[in-house]
Image (tube, rainbow, N blue to C red):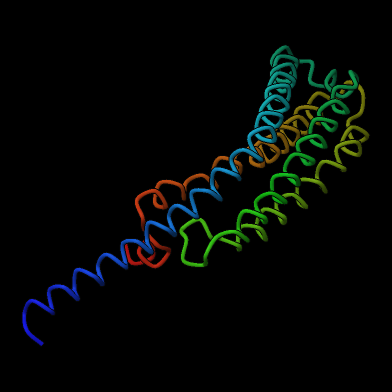
Length: 193
């Protein structure tokens, strides 16, 4: 084969590979855009719930700082925290459902194709759900006037609130792959880095 034919073949192969890469990227971008559109309201709702939870935790912290941690458990606010946790769990389950549909639209070579995250997210949801259900039992362990037990129980509430907040953060962590996807990297490219 002469040099001209080899050069033409190389150009044709490079063009074909580039066309396939751009087509895959465009397809993945369509899936990303659809996923964003479907999950934006879920993330917004979760953010509002999270802000309510943070305000409630601020109230708890004020009571503890004033030496009245037991009031947290007498106020009925633990039930409010539990309800906010349930609302967050609903949003997290909706998000995971959409995430599974998103993954189904991606090729396995996509940097966004991480089905193992579904298992991790569902495990986190189950852990938070179990702890959220046990909050009412925590209230029963605090005797009126026992500030030390109340303070320790509030620390447990704070740890729980942090875990509930991590559910909302997972919505944002999924988006990390968008950068490498936009750069045209494959999963193998990222693994080699």
